[in-house]
Image (cartoon, rainbow, N blue to C red):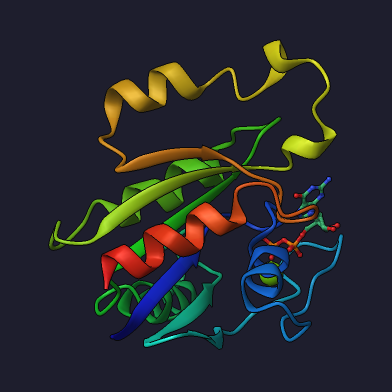
Length: 169
Ligand code: GDP
Ligand code: MG
């Protein structure tokens, strides 16, 4: 069993950190500075008979006003074509226009793949009332296959993501 899974989201939500966590080693680049990763970064997770290629997909949030942006955007979007699952990562404390932009890109094309909403950075959220106040509205608007509070930093629910990824193959 093998296949590809994409990690998408605006800059700074924790995509690279999640990729590192999923692979159990430091191969992606994480930084406080947004857009440190300008290119796709892939890594293979192997477990028993399953091999999953995880793709860190930056650039889906980019405005398409300039030709160069359209190109970068197309490169990002085309990497979604062959995946069996998309992990849409958001920051548990913030929802922005860039998140909206990324989400709009996910809805294009075929609907065969799973979409998981991963609400990241829950380790830093003490007050559960503050956890992603946007969620109810979002869940009503979009039919996510699963909604998971996660922490790429501490590993909360990352095993569940792997399980869903295996099931999607
Ligand atoms: P990317 O731009 O989406 O690839 O985000 P990065 O993985 O580079 O992470 C951006 C920042 O958020 C870095 O400072 C990370 O250490 C931090 N970060 C990522 N995941 C978590 C998390 O689960 N919890 C907390 N508290 N910080 C995180
Ligand atoms: Mg990154």
